[in-house]
Image (cartoon, rainbow, N blue to C red; front, side, top):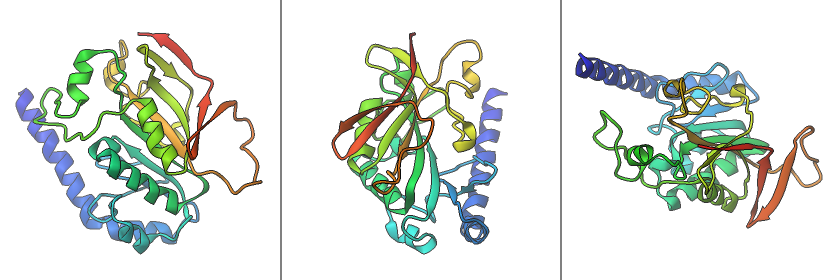
Amino acid sequence: MFDFMRVRAKRTVASWRFVNRQLGPSRLTNYLEHTTEPRIVIGSGTTHLQGWCETEQEFLDLLKPVDWDEYFNPESITALLAEHVWEHLTPEEGLRAAAVCYTYLKPGGYIRIAVPDGFHPDPFYISWIKVGGQSPGQHGNGHKVLYNYLTLGRIFQSAGFETRFYEYYDEHGHFCYADWDPKDGYIGRSSRYDKRNQEKLVFASIVMDAIKPKAQGAGDAEGDVLQLRQRGRGAVLLPAVACVPS
C-alpha cells in the first residue's frame, strides 16, 4: 500500500508539473499584464501561492538570461521565491543565477531562498540532503552542493545582495530563528510549516532573504532591527534571532 501511494503521489506531482510547463508561459505573460508588482516563484513544482506566479525551468531558466529578457525588463520584479532550488546548482552556477536575479529585481526587491542546512546536527538529516544522499523513497536527491548559512550568504553577497537570515543552524548546532511573514514568500520545508516537525524539529532549512540594495540615499526600511556587518560586496543583515541548543 505504501509503495502504491508513493507511486500515485509521484504521478500527481508529475502531472501538475506537466500542466505547469505547458500553460506556464501564457500564464506568466497574462500575469505580468495585470500587475505592476511581479512576484515570481522559481521552480515551483506543486507550489501555488495567491498573488504569485509559478514558473518552471523549461521556460524561465536561472542560467539563461535570454529567458528572463523575454518576460522582464531589468529592475522590474518585486520579489522572487526559490524553495530548495539552489542546492541543484553548482556554486558557480549558483552565483550566476544570483546575478540574474539581481539584474531583474527592483532596488529594494528581494529573493527568498530556502536550501537544506549543512550545519544541521542530525546525521540522518545530513544523509538525506548531502550531495549524493537520499531520503526514504528517493533514488537520489540531485543535489550539487550542501550549504550552511555562511556559504549560502557569500554566494548572494558576491552578487551584490544584502542577506537577512530567518532560520538556520549555527556552527555549534544551535537552531537560530527570527520571525518571518509567509505572505512575503511561503516556505513549506521550514520549522513552522513542515509537517514532520509536529512533535519536534526534524526537518529544517536555511531560510534567507537576499535583498537588492535601494539606490544610495533612499534610506533604510523603517522598523528593521538589524545588525549590519560589511562582508565583501554585499552586507550581512542579521535580524535579532533566538538560537537554542538542539
